[in-house]
Image 1 (spheres, rainbow, N blue to C red):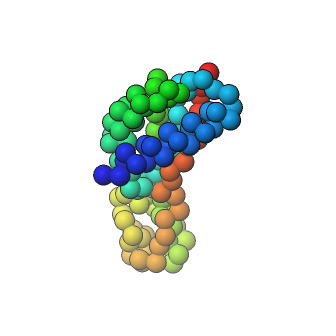
Image 2: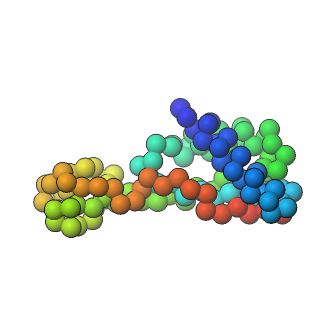
Image 3: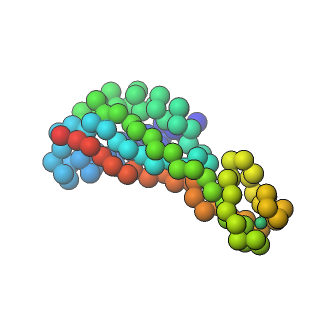
Length: 114
Ligand SMILES: [Zn+2]
């Protein structure tokens, strides 16, 4: 489980941004998280609740996770399909010549503070 490391990383980033913007507290952090990224949202939220208590700026901050659906593109028939449902094999032509278009995101989208 590497979610705790991920949470500390987010807290560091948010704290830096908060200081630069003269914030005294952060109310919420919106995170874009791809549905096939290696981070599990439930673990992330648990670690978040634990870790923010040790900070000054983020102790009240809510973590909002915005899921990004995973979509794969097929190079052979040029179609897009749902990665979670079909994996690496194209459901239209059966080709394995595919790549992930989106769904592996891990990005801080928004920080709301006071
Ligand atoms: Zn195909």
